[in-house]
Image (tube, rainbow, N blue to C red):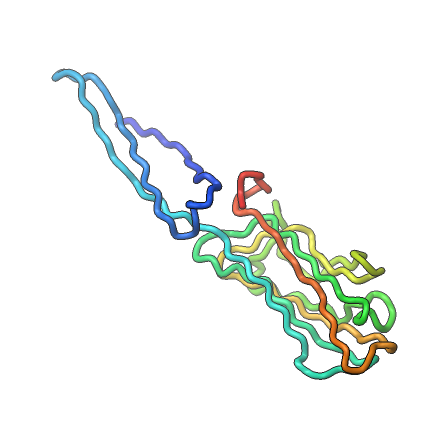
Length: 193
């Protein structure tokens, strides 16, 4: 018995999408007692890609100057069988939600059920202590995490309160920004998506 083991990597091209089946064939050509001969076999692999979704909810009310607004952020990997690696996530509050005193993100809570969402390259579960408050546009407006990996079917939940500034215009509206990017391959490989 001769066993040959090898790894394959699907190309990062448009036609290779989640759920696409790719068939490869291996052929062994040899010379035996009856002359030249060959054996072949094929196998089909199915492309699996992360499917990251960001959801943001506020308390659903109408808020005035000085009001506290509860926020819930969900980072969801809805993939069937693909971890999102090196997730780079950040939330940026608009200037109108930088009321009160710094830090502007209050009552932070991280829910990481089962501890399966881990800091990239470690087995350390993402927790509230990993959150970092910094500056993007306005002082103290950004909340972020070090890069992390989120397995398929998992959700990382982050909740916090933000305060409307006292000089906010009645009837005004304002938008924050939540963003994330990730890699489909382990170790921040530049060939991933």
